[in-house]
Length: 124
Image (cartoon, rainbow, N blue to C red; front, side, top):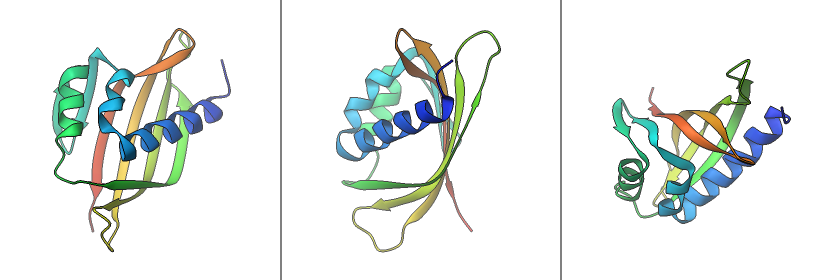
């Protein structure tokens, strides 16, 4: 298995830079069987997930990752779980929002796709 921390760092860097610049470009990271839970709402499939992400109610967003943890998620497949916390700056606002996000990445050839994705804003 590749160094999971390096994979997790490379993945999150790509994911958040793409999210911040072209949310539609994230569709290729999901598959028809992928699931996103966005603030408690489950969304199944790459097309529905992409639709949700591109229709979020803001014009600009910037992710700032503060923590990144990764673990293998299967003894037989080179899959991994990636947990991220950080700050979101939405529409160039002055009050960043705290978020947490967990991904389960499944190998797909020489790369990975997102099988599970759970996103939450952290209030309080």
